[in-house]
View 1 (cartoon, rainbow, N blue to C red):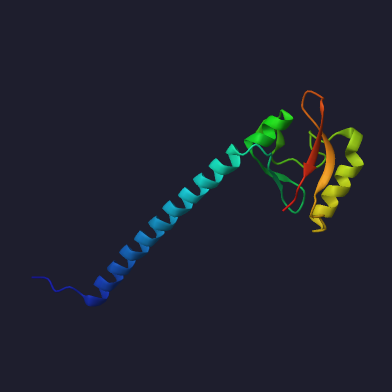
View 2: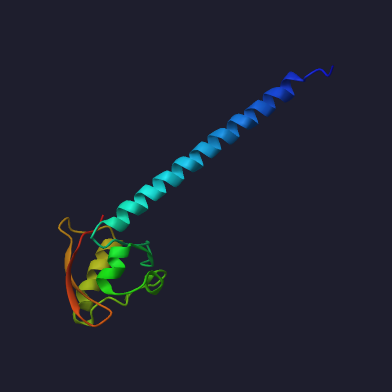
Length: 128
């Protein structure tokens, strides 16, 4: 009968425990991401996220529907974005610059954006 090396057996058990923990963490993260996506895509408010350089990195379905653009038309783009109204471009630029400098008013900004079809859309942009 083969003798079991206790140190080797401990290493094997540690690896099994580590794999179980890793699997559980991945499953929990997947559930959390699915839940977040379901919430973000079920609310009527448009959500857009830009990074610190102003690149648009996320939009929800409501945002796309509100302005008539597909996600692929919006993501990865830098200002001026296609939904910015030329009529309000100065206000929009100022709002973005304040936002990128962490100087956003609590009440947000009243701006005018533009639908893909050219219709002007007044919006209140709240930043968090």
